[in-house]
Image 1 (spheres, each protein chain N blue to C red):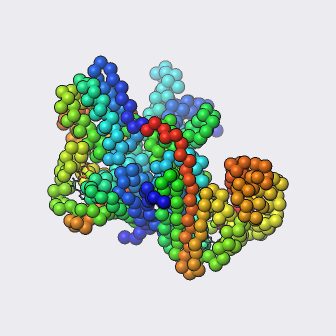
Image 2 (cartoon, each protein chain N blue to C red):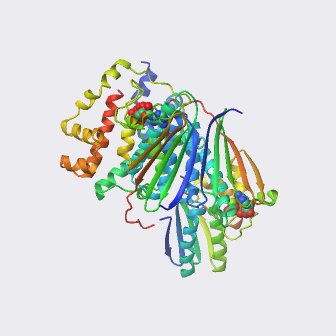
Image 3 (cartoon, each protein chain N blue to C red):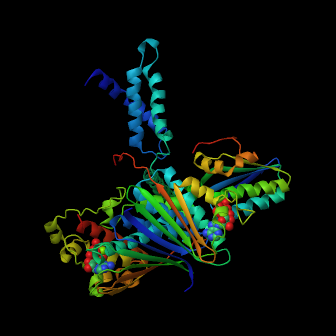
Length: 220
Length: 147
Length: 147
Length: 108
Ligand SMILES: Nc1ncnc2c1ncn2[C@@H]1O[C@H](COP(=O)(O)OP(=O)(O)OP(=O)(O)O)[C@@H](O)[C@H]1O
Ligand SMILES: Nc1ncnc2c1ncn2[C@@H]1O[C@H](COP(=O)(O)OP(=O)(O)OP(=O)(O)O)[C@@H](O)[C@H]1O
Ligand SMILES: [Mg+2]
Ligand SMILES: [Mg+2]
């Protein structure tokens, strides 16, 4: 490593410190960091020791300037980024609310807590949600890929897995009964609950979980 | 059954419209002020139905997918998802969990998920004509917050 | 003019559907990865056109509002907003900034906003038949970000 | 809640929240007007700092309050217009009415 690289490396902490001030404002950390590093390099290259200034005193404003430029350069912030950040915040606010009130907040309650409109909350949730549908997962994080490139499915492994007995058989006994009762014997959630000594709500929750897990197993 | 509000949407059977379909339905359902979980359930069910239109109904061609969302008096949501694709030969069989005509790629859980995540689901289909899935879910009305 | 993607939406002329209309259009436009500013411009223009349908076209009745959104090759968005309401007698006059037939709470700036926030706007209207607003905007394609 | 109203020394501040369109403007208008009629303030401040979106209905709201305050013999001031609303505010020509101020300008 050259002197320059080494020096810059040693001072990356300055960049992190500067970036922290700008998180949660629509630009992702990586990009803040990228701009900050650019600022650090500029600061190094233009630093004039003879003026008797500490490097950090000189560098911080340069780094901050580079980061601020990201915000100034056009509302060039992508909606997709903003939504992803908002979706993280929304999920955090949701958990915090549940912890405090013992129930889930409604979207309008979340919107008040977060200070954004209900439609923004919903858009953020859509942008941040990991889609459960198989094909959807291909395009969600990309900005609208036009072509759906089929995932090269490991056919043999899948067809093995797909043997119904095996997959359902792998479930813990209770889950297995639940699935068999609900879907192979077409019992209602109420009936299933009675037979398994659970409440209908428990059956409903459990069933969703199992279905999602099964799906994951089947689509590895 | 009084309809309070209704929207109709149609779009091309491209897979990048799956997320669009979820967004539209959530945006409309917002007026009932659901929780994240209720919204996620509905989105998941919509996603399954729309994916089925894309990968099964219009397997070999580009087609149009039609969605109607209705808000029914009392806080019920009705969602119809319709295609003019190949149709389903045996609906009962298709709805069996793990049944799929696309082994190797698909799990055969789409209908099971729709059933489990929504209160009600009805399937109408005619081979060569297309399929309509009608799903319903009630949103729990909470003490109206002070708006 | 190659159409890459298209959606059609219709909904009732209720005022709480204004925000729904904005959400739908933005959900569709999202596939072009717009900036916050670009999207806000589009939402504002859509809001103006939809509000006009509700407060002017269907002033005395409940009607249906139709929106078509198209993504055109090259990153252009075309939005058509149509009503079957009363129509506009004098389009030139209606488009003048500050012209309004509903003094009081309305500013008469709807068309001015649409013109200023979109690249292009065309108005078609027939008294007693309805009005169609067609607007276009190009989304600037930036160097693909490293996502 | 779409508007938060507070008053002090015969001045009302109405903090508008969320999105202002034709649908939401109605409730905002009613709340502000009933308070203004009760108090007859010397100044009504419309605080836009928490507004995420507005279309021309927001301008109508301001112009309507401007007239209302003239009737009540008070003044109207629009404060804290965030950057993302500057363009539409500029389009409105509200600047010419002298109601737009730079008081407590915030960046969004
Ligand atoms: N809209 C449709 N048009 C034609 N056939 C359909 C349609 N929807 C479902 N089917 C048929 O029903 C079968 C079962 O559908 P289901 O959604 O349960 O499973 P899948 O789509 O095969 O797999 P998964 O949904 O788990 O990815 C499909 O394999 C297909 O043959
Ligand atoms: N879809 C429509 N159907 C019938 N008349 C319309 C329609 N859109 C606009 N108009 C007429 O054109 C006039 C100008 O419309 P514009 O949107 O510019 O102003 P406005 O709606 O009156 O006020 P603002 O939009 O500022 O609230 C309206 O007052 C109305 O008479
Ligand atoms: Mg499926
Ligand atoms: Mg108007």
